Length: 212
Image (cartoon, rainbow, N blue to C red; front, side):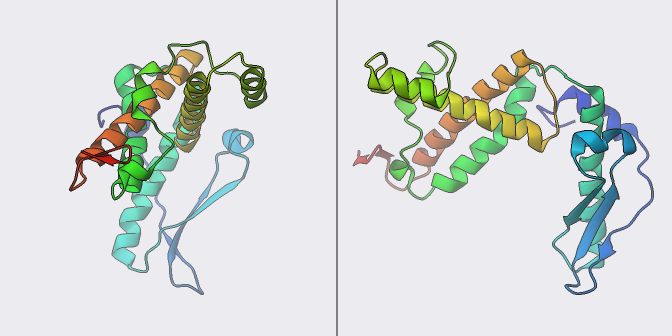
């Protein structure tokens, strides 16, 4: 089990996967995965069959990718069957590491040009009340009940919570509210770390548009 992998995944590793093979698309020559969704999960998944391009025309590579993707599906379905689970901190950060990798790759070349994530506010997230909806935020700002910095903090918190939800959906994980909040904080840490690492990777150290 890799560091940070939710414990609810591990049971599927001991399952014997049914014998099946990648299917060749007759027109493109690219191999695909086709897998029928178990009857008890059709309602949760929202479809009866999963289809996925393996993005290769090589038979050997297709078999390798097929096995990897099939295992991912079995893990996802096991997560749906197990119901809400709890994430410890190391699991939350393991799930959020992809956010760090994405941020680093996206802003590696010009980290000072990104304006979404202000590193000076990163340590202030969740030091204020729970995030509220966009309409409430706008009303508070317009009526002078919240300052620009507080607005930005709440906006970042909301983004982290939405991103955490996306991560959970991608892994087909259902978690309790404490674990969801834990993952949102891990996403915030991953974003801040990604920005810091992107700045350090620059030939010239740049901090928010001003060369040092």
